[in-house]
Image (cartoon, rainbow, N blue to C red; front, side):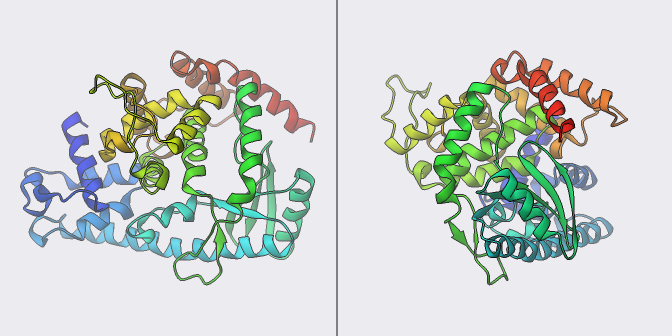
Length: 385
């Protein structure tokens, strides 16, 4: 796809989410010679079929997709809606059972992110990720309790245990974040321990579910979900669904909503940084996330028109262009990246990871250099358990 076509798609995403008026879509001028089938494939690759259906529903009939494609798209959006209904109930059920077992916890990403969308049912849902504020042995015992009646326990990694409960995939996290760099990882674990209690106390209610659940605050998510994007960027790739999630995290955070950004290239004198934003920036620096944050700000500006005053750090255009290229090429979690091996064996998987490390080495040496050593250590750790 051309740069102009991507620009049009980005505007349509903004229009679909209600953050851009989109006159050119409403009067049809943007759709002269437009290929709806290409947009459908793009939306499917990025897991945005439900989101873009929101935009299509606003269009006059004369400029909408042709009937067969429209019905196909509508059917897909209804499946997404129904899946959200199922996952909302499953999320509340998992949370209630964990609390009944005596553990404090919060739901990461997922349905908590969906609450920030204009239509929570339009976001493509995934599995249920839970951060359990307990030791590894306690989480292992909890996994056994949760799967006793109608479930099964899957793989265990350094930071989570995989479960299946009533057909729904669940991950119980002993810690929500592990970094390749040992210094940054040590600081990350300290930061997480300091913030755990507050995240397990921030209650919200999901649509059509009466039981409240705990989800992280937006201030916490600015750092945690940026790490999550960073991790997947190294591991396999990220897609626009995750980019849009992060856009809503930032724009819904009170600490950055009305504050000004310092060090703007357009101004001769730096602006004053509010204390709240300064704390976020200091945390990002300490955790080794500042560089990636600059790249993400560029992507959010390009895709979602995030204004400079809402940014948590100044944009990094070079790294941002590289990140956006990877997002558009690989799609959701890099599943459509044509550089991925055709087989998923041990050797091909690890060769792919090494290739990603080499691509990212110049931009993020602090995380790329230790990644192969961390992976080898993690493999040995798993073999001994």
